[in-house]
Length: 117
Length: 117
Image (cartoon, rainbow over the protein chains, first blue to last red):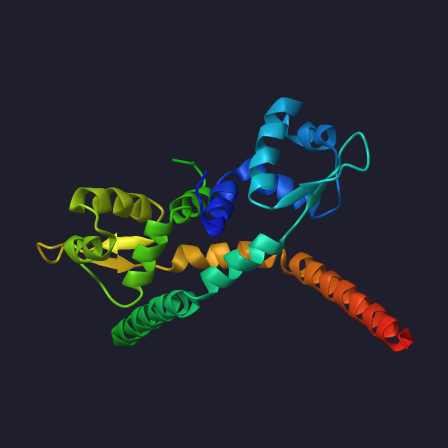
């Protein structure tokens, strides 16, 4: 497990099943059995994923019921969003350059069309 | 290497050295040697990290010069930001609940203070 919090969060998110579990929990708290059903996974396999999510602080497991419902905690995702947002101007610049290039190609194409007899 | 693009991006970001390399490249393109210097890492160790970043589409390496400069490509970070943003209302709700709780504690504290002779 990486020592820093952001690395632990990114590592936990680097799996489509774990992201699907978070998406399911966004609809409300759920038991391990309920979470396992759509994935055709055994409860122990789901429990393994839940432990990774729990260590990253992305879910909490209640002790108030014997079925120990899982609950989403999106707080670490705020750090993920803030971290990625630092790079916004870079992806926007890149998209702008691609659009400029596309417009250039389109205007060349039009000129070419006009030259045709 | 995970098959889906978002998993590959998250896995590449789950390392503080790789995130520091991206941060360095945000200031401009750089050689492997220049990237290695602040980390006290050997160029082969840096090259290994660069390969992970390159496979995730986060950097490109130019072939126009023998020193093959590395360049940031922030496009996959837009997907990371968009993915995390889906959960905004969950982290905001959680922060609101914590603030409500804090205000409640503070008002109890004030009442208690007033009762003192």
